[in-house]
Length: 438
Ligand code: GH3
Ligand code: MG
Ligand code: MG
Image (cartoon, helix red, strand yellow):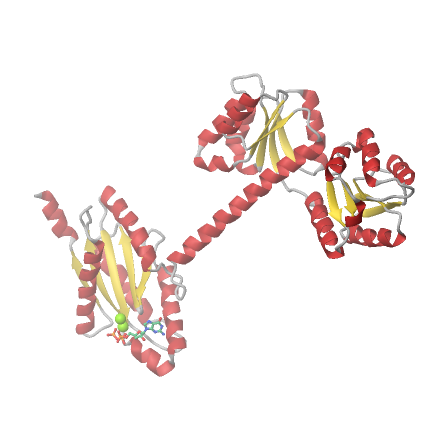
């Protein structure tokens, strides 16, 4: 970016130059009105920063007025650096074409403001756009602007074609720019509505509508139908790009918030020590598993297990080793059950696994294998065993899942009482099946 600084004081020239070049801008200097206009004609300037007071009664406001007369500088930002003794009329300054007025009195503030202004202007957008425009001339101009901003796009002349492309690869697009008046089955308004109706996911796709007709009712209808913003043709490059940038940045922020929420949700459902689900997740996810089991008439196998004499592990080796053992048990569970099974740390050294669609025989065999797996695992030279209560059952909408856990817990108690390191089980599937038959 090339910046023209118009300033009569050498010291102030140096101060401003430093701020701009510190942000990577190329600086050109002028010390009065004539000199500034010469530079503007000779060079291609992207931003003008002028002092309010120039040499011989000339001022920055007059300079701004003259700059706006030059066709290529109609949209260029012109910053006016003023101090309190300039008796400045803000109204007059803005009318003359000044974009923003900065106060010279605080260097730090001035420097911060210029820095953030340059950052906003130079921040590039990495985007791929679906662009629909049937006028070749309008499309050529917009595509040139997009290319200059290094934005990539797919251009279609009709919304019908574009809609097919959108359905196929909407994940490739960061936003849509669509003309409003279009030939074919879908016009711009129809296209916006069609996108919004595909799936709720598509509500997030930013849409900028473009029209040669600046009609309020049409604009309101477009926005109501789901367009996020509206721009009237012919538009200047800066306005197009800033609208594109705003829409894309909003979408990125939205995506960020969504993924943070997802992460928080995951964290809230997870037991931090073992990586398994926690009790809270159990209350949320188990009803879903039960509904699936009811719908598909599948049995559930409940494994309720507890580490034997775990208190001794803590007492002999300390709490940290105890925690390591629990984490290791979590790992074994994660590696030995299927994704469709539900496993959780029920509390302390108690765990629960709910198997989906397994018979009684399969469930006890799985439980027995798991018991042996734990018994044969080396927990950093330490050995542990578990006792398991196993219950297989069909569920219905009246089933209280906590009651089933209580039954599995009683079976676990039996396993403990009868010597530990064993499985105690009960089959309720046949019982339920019989009662279902009568
Ligand atoms: P049993 O064979 O009858 O199950 O005996 P036990 O010693 O395993 O059972 P008890 O209920 O008497 O003790 C459980 C122990 O588990 C006591 C508690 O300190 C320990 N414990 C519970 N949660 C944690 C934990 O998060 N980390 C560690 N290190 N220990 C825990
Ligand atoms: Mg125990
Ligand atoms: Mg216990």
